[in-house]
Length: 568
Image (cartoon, rainbow, N blue to C red; front, side, top):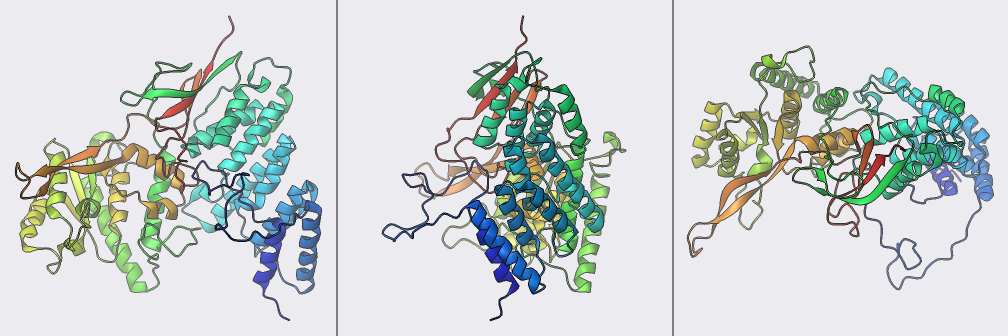
């Protein structure tokens, strides 16, 4: 009986177990009264569940591994990951380390975070801060090697710790009173996670309520902290510090309210202090531009394995024909020349003086505005050109410079009605229109215009851009960019006649400007820290990028406030 290789890989994963390992604050599966997830419909018989001990799992897994070796079947990354997890759960970290080394040397094994995660978590659970940091540094080293080998557009985004590993490191730092790891991990979380999970928030609070956060505590060993500091992965040049994390005394206030109109906290130990806007670093901005260009010219970003773009836009447009590649490159070069002529050099060119650039104030996603509320019965197939014109006029009448991006198919004579031709002509005469060329996605163009312009340029769209959100593999930076630069919108509905006999018509544009502050972990000053809590309606703000806030979350925006209190 011949058994396919994938069957062996599946068996190894079954030995590891199929429990959910994710950490997020999103909506969970429906739970039973005993707290277990409800995976069965009412009335279905429940199978008998036999628990398998870590020792038995290990025996089964390595019996399979031995058989695979006897038939010269190589292990791949999922197989190595399952074996390392099994050893780590059995607390056999020594053999897990050896297997990890073997996996790193295996040509068929492409390293991923999950291959390292279980070992790091095992060390954290054992309070072994030194070895946990060694695994973190090891992962960082492998990540850098992958960047060099592939020349990836993703830079160091290839392998990064997730919130689960960060949370474990914080708990281990609290257990071992290691302030250098706590400061570093808190800084990383503040950069990577807009809304931390409840587990992570509680872990951060536990640190500030522990002896490790108290200066001159007997529990802290300065020599050990100094040794561990030398083992940490190199700190990113643009990573802001969330320190200090050690003081004479700390005060923690939970569920603090805020006046969202002026960013002022209205309760808790930081009452009357204001939250600030936190901008993307230049490096993150540059990475987003490179990734967007990679999507345009190559059809995807290195490392994104799904065949779909996301956002219900179908499969990726892979460029296989030479003429298609050349045409795409030609169109993109023409577009970048247009940007240079209209705006000047891109925002990330730090050597250019701001006085030499003419960035647009507003970039409009024409298709998103034009199709807004156009899905009623017998609605036309074309965009609402008048609706787009209202949006453009709203900003130009305020003296703002505007560019609206719309795909060239919307100007095809078979699609565009005759009455809209004058509107389109007006747009071209005023220089407020850029037509995205055939064979392209207009999202690429308006996004690149906005990134090229810089921090002060806003984008008008209700599109959550999930195709870029997942495909760019930089959703952390992308979500933060959206927070600071995206305007959502609606149109006021007006009656054509007092009695409403002639129905409704679309009124003026109602844009929603970004908040004047950033809802994320931030230092208000050297002595104060705030951590946002999830609120009802939150979506796409979590590290995994795909979950909504639990229905039990409060409706209002709240924060955990942490304040340094010096003893008198």
